[in-house]
Image (cartoon, rainbow, N blue to C red; front, top):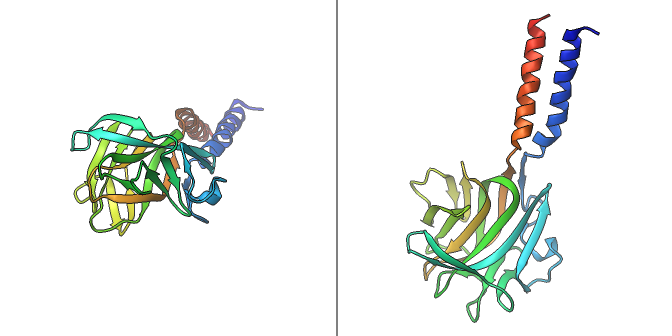
Length: 224
């Protein structure tokens, strides 16, 4: 076996080895066949209130927790406190909300500011978000890995992270992280989280192996 042949086989081996890792980074949709954040997807009964909500789809796991939030009024968070039993995450038939003492089941900013923190087990890119009980008076805030990306977003006009808005569905670009906090801080803001679409970010090792494999194939072709 010639050195050229060995190099070609090695390069192909790198590509074959890395393709499964890259294919796991394809876009997936919570709710492609059924709504993601729902009782039937978790084994939790409709209307239950829980401290956390876990879900795994397409090899990506997310854990959701509820918080009350103290902010500076411009999207910067000063402190957060997890909401736990008997209050917490309200699990709907097709969405997630937050309940605190006598304050309904919507994520709202009436009195205490409320939010849901979605913590993924790997880095993901947020592609879109679907909110329920959304009206013309509502807006929301998004904090990613502790950084406020936008505040009081309704149509999100002027935000470089938002590509389009259609009613209660928001399409994003360039938002990557592990912890996504969706929260409200206005007395007229109230909504629930229905579903979101994320894309897994390939690990650096997979990208490096792909680059080495392609480089090896190119080098071997040059020597033919």
